[in-house]
Amino acid sequence: DGAAYAALLAMSAAFAILPLFLTIALAARWLEDPEILYAAERGVFALWPKLIARPVALAIEAASRDLSTAALPAMALAFLVLAGNALDVLRRALERFYAPAASPKGALRQRLRAFGYAAFAAAIAFAVAALVAALTDLPPTAPAQEPIAPPPGAGPLLFAAQTLGGLALVAGSLLVAHTRLARGGLTVRAAAPGVAVSVGVWIASVNLLALYQIHVAPPQTLYGPFAAAFATLLFFFVGACALLFGAALNATLARPPA
Image 1 (cartoon, rainbow, N blue to C red):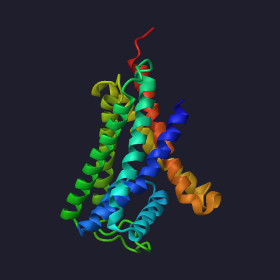
Image 2: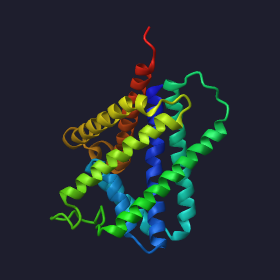
Image 3: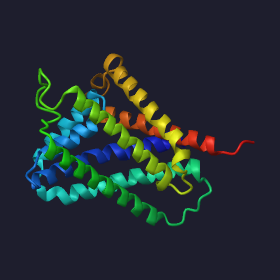
Image 4: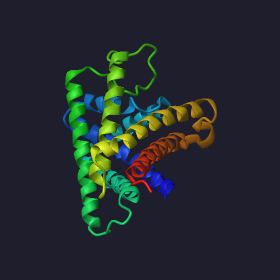
């Protein structure tokens, strides 16, 4: 079941990205502070291979220009549904390892809980992006043309801070998922090995994936105009497999010796 759960999680998470950033873009436009979107993009896409991050950022920028702020509630609802589904798939996948005999009662409450987690995470992301936008002067992540020289605010120290901060957020989110999202979840100490392995495997795999797509099989050659969509789905699938591999490791370590 691991591959099926990874595929479902990848699709739900990938399809939630665009509504999430469109929501942030429309809210930023409503607040007349477009730098919030740029800060949010930089914070997330610092962890993505550039081959995938740039087309997605350009798609978000183009889509946000074509929508009015009246679409804000619909975009927020779309994100909650898709992200809530992704969290529920993640919960079910974790319970396959941690609580395979758990009762299916309370499924609606679990789904609503997933929506609540998604809404809380989106609010935190928007608040952090607003704070970064207020404290720094960030240019857009995806300008129409790639600049010859790095723009102001794009130095190595900022990139390192974005990357390390993003990895800390990923690790913290995985710890919450392992310990709080699924019934029969582990303690923080018991969940730490699998989370560490998931993060390490994810970093290695997405970088290998980027090298593969650049030097072996460019997505544009394989998928044509759908290259960005398929590359993004593959990126999320690799991450989902790394996450579930860590859960399987934790379940094995927690199992009493025979």
